[in-house]
Image (cartoon, rainbow, N blue to C red):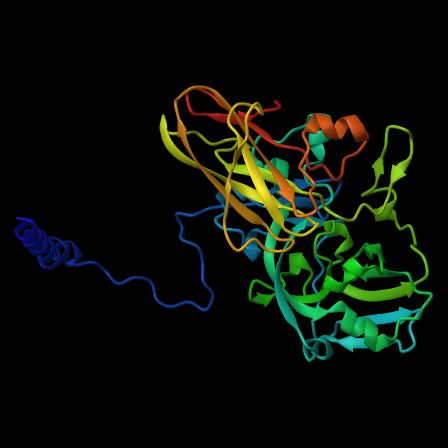
Amino acid sequence: MKRTNRRRVLQLSAGLGSGLLGKADEGRPPGRPLSGYGERSKYVKPARTMRQTKTPQAGSSATPLADMYGIITPSSLHYERHHAGVPDIDPDEHRLLIDGLVERPLMLTMEDIRRLPSVSRIHFLECGGNSGGEWQEKTGPDAQRSYGLASCSEWTGVPLRLVLKEAGVKPEAKWMIAEGADACRMQRSVPLVKDLDEALLAYGQNGEPLRPEQGFPLRLLTPGWEGNVQVKWLRRLFVTAEPHYTRDETAKYSDLMPDGKTRIFTLTQEAKSVVTFPSGGRRLAGAGWYEITGLAWTGRGRITRVEVTLDGGREWREARLDQPVLHKAFTRFRLPWKWDGKAAVIASRATDESGYVQPTREELIAVRGRNSGYHFNGIKVWRIQADGSVTNGDA
């Protein structure tokens, strides 16, 4: 009997292949021709949300995290943060100067840099101001507008230590000033510490040259550190004995503490996570099985654990981490969930290999107060209503 049924199934399949499907294909016009550069389907329309400050050239745009699969952010959807617009730089004319406390000052062309030994590595990049509104309860209604100033790419470039070794850094050197070629001459003081061994002079992103918004033709990449220190359109590395206390490390990207003191050079991005489905602005179709999923990352190395709560934090369940779990990169987590159609409060919390556990918003405020607009990594809560709609849990 089993053999007869299998033969019948095969006959039906053959009939479908030669009959019904064949008729459906009759008269179908050919598709569009080849193109020089691939485009998304017209039915897929993810986009970054944009926020301008005082001028059109200053502002940010956020990655639509809830629309992403896996851990790699398409270059076209990588978050942006600019202080003076995006410069138009001819790579043939661009130069990188390395001077200051070095034995042999260098002036490198892009051709010089691309001839050096290179590496490709996957790392996240996060703006120090990501989720900054969460401190003041100006919480974003969805994952994009609350946590979207974070992205993850494969970066290609030359290890910074190679060019610093070639220049011959002097013993008294403890810092370097990275300067960009944009209109505001973005400058950040960068400590010459062990963590900098991972730094790259990056010229590639996701298999192609950097996009102009990401620093074409050259940017500094310091994995795990806040985005602003990873200077785009890099034109100079001035090696020095001390920091220069530039505008963007004093007036900005620093944290005023409750006792009146200021945390400065807060470089390492702490462990953080966010549920991207279901998340704010989405709606569940009805009771039944779903897969809760999201992203976790840390500037201290690898994510070791992500837990998900379905009841506002009373109980936590361990989620599955997609492999491989990479060093200082996004980690995708997943948890199967059978929704009973009742209201629920969901959130995620991450733990990294240093043992650091992502705190709640209340725990952060208890230590650091409400005076900061930077370096927020608190737990993000979503509320699911009985009709399936999902809203910001802190609203």
